[in-house]
Image 1 (cartoon, helix red, strand yellow):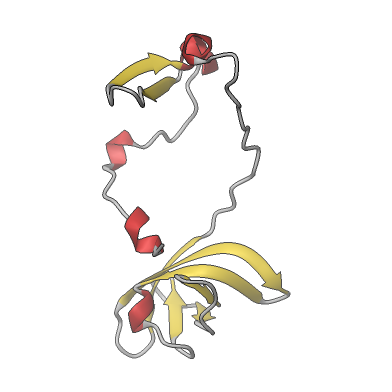
Image 2 (cartoon, rainbow, N blue to C red; image 1 turned 30 degrees about the vertical axis):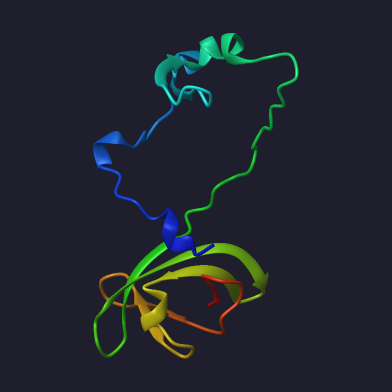
Length: 131
C-alpha cells in the first residue's frame, strides 16, 4: 500500500495541541462495526464499549519532533521530510513529500535560510527513503 493513501487534510483547529485538563474526559470517536454508526463519547466511557473477548493494545511510543520543512536547492520547490527512525550515525529512514520529484542526490535546504541541509538517498520500502 502506498503511504500517500494516508494523506488527508486536517484543519489546525481540530488538532489537540495539549492533553485534556481532566484526562479521563478526553474525547473518543466510537465506530460500531456492525451498523457503521459513529458516536462521540469520553474516554471514561470506554468500559461500556468493551466485550469479554476484546484485546486492548497500548501504544507507549514517544514522538520526536521529526517533521522537517524545506525546499529543493536550486529550484526552491517545497519538500517535507518526516524522519521515521535512525538507521546509522547520520542516516535516517524517512518519508519524503513529494517523493517522486526528489531523486537520490537531491539536496533539501531546511528552514527559511537553508542553514541545515538533507540529502535524499536511496529508495527503501515503498514510500520510504534514506536521508
